[in-house]
Image (cartoon, rainbow, N blue to C red; front, side, top):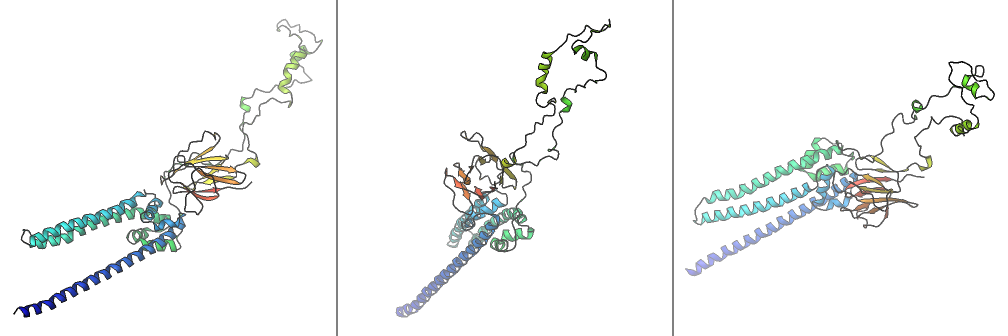
Length: 395
């Protein structure tokens, strides 16, 4: 009897072991397929975002860095970049809470099944439903934040609200259409940002007309008529008779050389009173500023000095008292108060990083320039994430 029982148990055990091995193989294959799909989606999305970053003038290499690529999109939309960290951190926290909650509920279900009391079937149902509710709540919050970001971002590309929904739900598809399609970055209008105090203002319409100062000039002295000389003129002439009218004032004493000498400086040189003095000094044509700087807001500032200090609220260095300070309205908050220094030399313009927080990137380079070392610059450069363009002009 014992041999029969043993013979019947062995095939059952072998079948159980075989089914467990098959289930493990299927699980490993499913995990490998999921990993391949995840890597493929990530590569696809990074390539598409790199094309988007090229259109907006940002380094395409940032599209391959997790969290940092999403950070760039939030900043382009005019929002704080740390919303990307909030989304990723919220997803990780939701996954952890769901796993811990499901484990606790499953343990209570096992206790109920082995006689510890409670509804085992209800606990198993809760182990499935509660984590699902966590994920649904997080997904709803994430979609709202993504829609808030995608709205202005799509307006910057000239696209409608449908693209905002597409970007919030299927970011790689949206990035593929925008990055590899015909969309052009138009920029996001930033209403309410005041112009920089150093921006060049348009010249007034009547600037060419000199100020009229004749109202403050003394009245001109009328020249005496040769046909009818005045009594005073007669009295000033040598040998003129003294008036005999009893009601007339006492005759004036003859005035000769001292009077003429005292009046000479007033008429010497031009022969006219100094009443038409124009206080406006015109800048010589060969000294007009030929360089200009375009700020992130689209405004252009004329560079009128050989040394220019850049930042949110730049301070002029003590060794360069004549430097021009240019304030930058930076919505990204990545520009330091005193960020960089531009200097014009005989070889052109150079830029120096003044120990800023987020560094300086020149041209299409993806690495920051060394702090305190002048680097030649012409055209586009970045202060943090704020893009500026230098037009060196010509002499």
